[in-house]
Picture 1 (cartoon, one colour):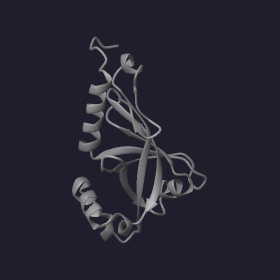
Picture 2 (cartoon, one colour; picture 1 turned 45 degrees about the horizontal axis):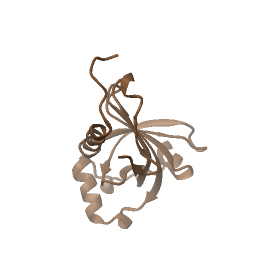
Picture 3 (tube, one colour; picture 1 turned 135 degrees about the horizontal axis):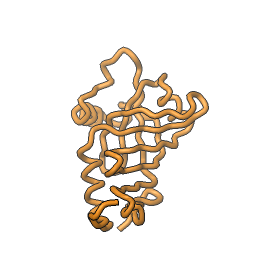
Length: 151
C-alpha cells in the first residue's frame, strides 16, 4: 500500500485520456471458439471514441474477434493500469478512409497495407474503462460505464 492518496475522478479521467492518446501499444485479450483464450500485444490508434488495431486475418486473435467481438484491453504497468472492456468490429481500411490508415501508420510505426499476409483492422468501442494505481484506488476505478464517460 502506498502513502499517496487516491486520485479523484477528474484526475483519473485526465490521466487515462492522456494514456489513451499517447501510448502506442496495449494488450489484447480475446476468446472464441476458433482459438480459445488468447493474449497478444498490438499497436493502436485512439480517435477519442474507439481503438483501431490490426492483426492478421488468419491469426488466433483475428479469428476470435470475428467469432466473438468481446475484447479486453490493458494499457500501462500493473501499478498504473487501464483496463478496457469493449466490442470489436471488423472493418476494411476502405471503409475507414485513407486518412485513418495513414494516421494509424504514423502513430504506430506500422503499416499493414503493404504486407503480403492479409491483415484485418478492428474498431474497438469501449463499453467500460477502469483505471487504478494501488489498492487505495480500487474504489472509484470505473471511469466509463455502458460506453459513457463518468463525471
